[in-house]
Length: 113
Length: 112
Image (cartoon, rainbow over all chains, first blue to last red; front, side, top):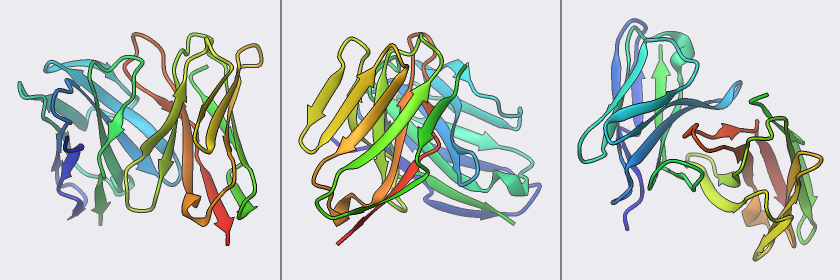
């Protein structure tokens, strides 16, 4: 089975712009979670989707949003980018999303200038 | 209460030695405790996971020890190898939250 794929792998944006990141989960997995990883804050949960519904959301401002499509693929959007949004954004998928292994993609490295 | 505290922040071990990383939690509702290994430029990869109904789980050179009463769990890497040099994260989750709470990570370096 192919693993979790994320596109693009690298992005450079300037402050005030917006960005959309994409994630394709492992075939058959219906839960997709997003995490932000930074050296200072570590891995922090952004949100989780299952069957196109957001079931949980972390403590991030409303500039961070996401969605999931009927094929379980997911996108996350960050609007009005700030310097502090520079991070590795990781997507993880699992079958049902509860108390089970999450499989991570390689991440999208976002640099905001 | 949602935190998972991980130590040490960094660890240097000689080849063939034992690497030990510890995590502690407060929320007794946590019921799934995975460990992830992350190499530079890669996403975290699951190493081993445990549920609170067992006190120890071993997979190859990797062992999780779990102490429910102390609310602590640890990762032991036996016969550590230079290829084990990576960052290790513990995590915890519980039913109904659909998310992991991660520890802050331990950067392990195994000297040849």
